Amino acid sequence: MLNIEQGKLQVAADTLKQAETIMQQVFEKPHPFHAILYYNKSRLLLLQGKTKEAIAEANKAIAITERFFEPEHPSHGDNYTLLGDILVSARKGEQAKAYYRKADKIYQHTYKKNHRNRTYLRDILNRLDPKQEMLAVF
Image (tube, rainbow, N blue to C red; front, side):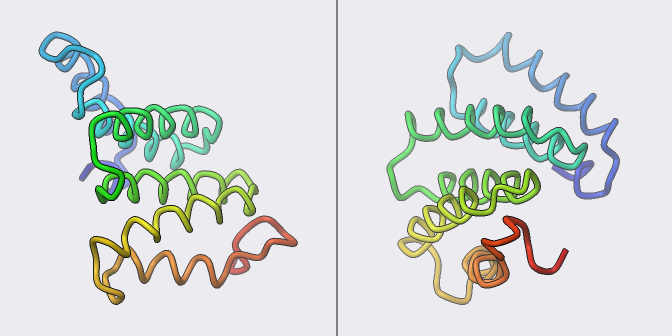
């Protein structure tokens, strides 16, 4: 979501709220588009430092993608990567590593070894310091 990437967090929050209202009127719950909504809400909450709420939204996205998509669909990897990022932010490095590994296992079936998603996971797994339960670069 562009507003999130540009750091316009309030605009992003307002846009997500509008999207959720429209989706409630158009789609029955759950619908695959709800997974995208929850994914983006989770990203926003992570940037706002609201890790508990971000974890809850990420788990909603995961539940929906698990219901609608094949086990090797890259959306699962995206959701697991985001949940890993949130867990790192919450200083739960060991839990994060499990989700990063799950994501990489999915990406192995979809992307080549040098794809940015796989490179990101290799990078972060190499830097994750289990003793500190946070990224070694912080």
